[in-house]
Length: 222
Image (tube, rainbow, N blue to C red; front, side, top):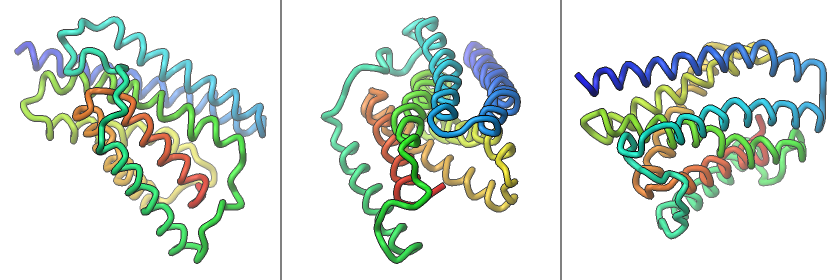
């Protein structure tokens, strides 16, 4: 009964956050992107991302009793975790191969802008990992029977939180494109979650998340 109540609480918190992020995306981020450009747009959207995601993440982590977490010190540094480097190498090979297959060359895409380094490399990984792995998965693992169940649940929820962005993109994305993006993000969410639970540190998932996003905008585009 206690676990059921905690599970409902977590889902409610996720629901509130989903609605909050949808409102922020529609009424703040979209206007910022329509009315500004360059570094102004980047700094404003980054400030919004950090305020909402890091603000919520830090608040929830530091106002939750440590015995309700699977990993009591999620920000503890662990860079000796060997799967981190194996994963980074695999991602690099995958991105290089994908770039070559798609464009028959390996080079920085024309759409890449230096402003992308802020959000796609330094901001998004830290913010999203803090909320989804540092808090949500960290608590979820204590109340579900298996590690696999926790990883799958948080991966699906992680994919769905991207819907506000996909649904407000202009020109509008096709349903097939959105579904493909959701599947990709869910798989990545599972990977990030696995890195967190096995290393018992957020830093491997933050690093892999950040490198993935950077290589996407650098070599693939989008």
